[in-house]
Image (tube, rainbow, N blue to C red):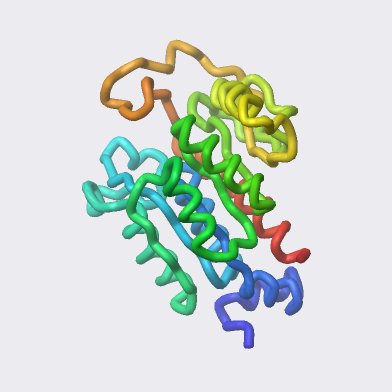
Length: 240
C-alpha cells in the first residue's frame, strides 16, 4: 500500500513509479546547502531507504542557506538534525546515519556496505569528492555530483550535463583535472552553473579548513542546486 502522504506523488507519477521509489536505496554524502535540501526532496519523493553522511556540525553562518541550520540547532551534528527531519517526513524510512567525514579507505567501506541504487555527491572538499566519484564509477553505481553553488545568484544558469561539458566553475575544473589523473574523463553526471563568479566575493582564511577559502552564498541558490540534483536521482530511479 502506498501511504496517504504520497497520494499527490502517486497522482502525478502513477502507482508503479511510486512503488519503484519506495523500493530504492540512495546514498547522500554531504548535508550542507545543496545536500540537505537534496536529501529532503529525495525523502519527500518517497525513496524507502537512504544513507546520509556528514561529520560537520551546524554553524550560525550556515543559517542563510542550509536546511539543518537554525539558531536552535547550532553546534548539533547536521546528519542527526537531518535524520530527525527525514523520519518526521516519512516515519517508515529506513535510514542509516553516519556522522563522520568520509575519505579514502572509508569511502570504499561505505559504498560496499549496502547495495545502493544511486549515489549523490554533495561534498565540497576536493580530495574526498574525487575519491567518492571514482569509487562509485569503479563499481558502476549511478552517481550525480553537485559542483559549485557558491558565488552564484542566477538559478536559470544551472545545468545538468556530463562532467566533461562543465565550464565556468572552479570546482568543476579541479574535479575534472583530478579525475583525469585516475582515468576518468567522462561518464559522470553533474549539476553546475555557467554563471561568472565575482572573485572579490571569495576570501582565503584558515576558518575554512579543510578548504582554503570561503565564498559568498545566497539563500536560494544551493537549495535550487539541491532540488535539481534530487530531480536527477528521482527521475533516474522511478524509470528503473
